Length: 439
Image (tube, rainbow, N blue to C red; front, side, top):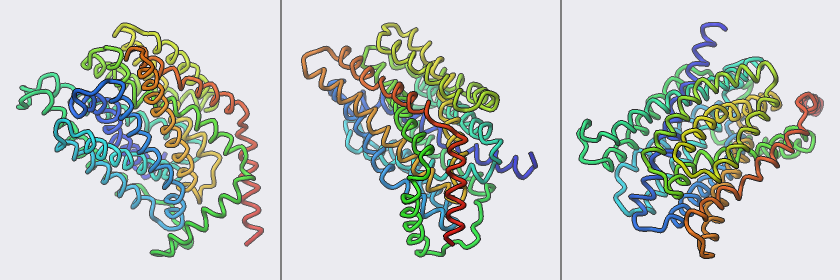
């Protein structure tokens, strides 16, 4: 790999290092605990879980509705990095704003969280799309996995510092753990903003022969989106994969977003849950790299199946666990596959899309992922709330909620079985040939 390519790959991967601080410290770590114990103080646990689930779903809907349109517009100009910068810095600002939200202000907390999540997910559309410009196709698996590995390491390092602050607030000059957690949200915003800079400086956006200027880019992007919908019927394998992805990534996102909330709801100590998340992060770093190697050896599809099998085991075990030690063990097991299934899904998909429409097609990819994220948390929170209102205990309601979406892994795995990568490539070549003939 040439020096310039290595610099581009490293700079691209550092964006995962940047925004994974939001995924770890905020989304998976402190926000669910703080939302339940500080911003929703005095509220029944099933109600606070439902609020959190619906907040995640609201963010998913906003991103899902905009993703393909924004991607198509970005493809018609040289705007992927500009769109990424907008979403990244909006997310960083909204995350830092959580520092100022006072106790009991759950509406303001949800508003900041939703827009922070939109920034996180929206930025990822264009971050994912840029992989086709920083790596050759044969390196997709390794580069994609490297990004997730950097994410686990960077997110884990800041998370570890923030956990230290909350466990020993007096060491850092804070009055109590609550003040330390609020400051942690501020550090995430700064971390995200700073480590976004290398991508903006050193990653070259693929040049178009005739990029559209200004507002013409919007009209051209919308026309491209219309044409892509017409081509969809000829890219059946690609969209069969997207259907499979839609089902199985739901469960992955739900576990990431709702694991700590679930642990709290069944009576586990918040400090133990945070330490378990740290285990996931630092197990995830080498495991993501390992999955990249495995994907290169046996193929990404088989490696994804291995991860799905592990997740099915986790779902069953998680519904029946009663000891904090089990949560620690499950955290380690999830860490071995979480980055791998995300990285290889991204690289597998990148092989089957037209490179000149990468942002638009990754817009579809993220749209389906976000619509999946709408279902999982809402099912978990909503079904658990129904069980609670039927007269069962909060513990039973939470266990019912987590089991209600387990079926989605099985559906996704079944659909993935019928995806043939070579057939997908043939369909893509046929569409490209047809496009040239029509010009």
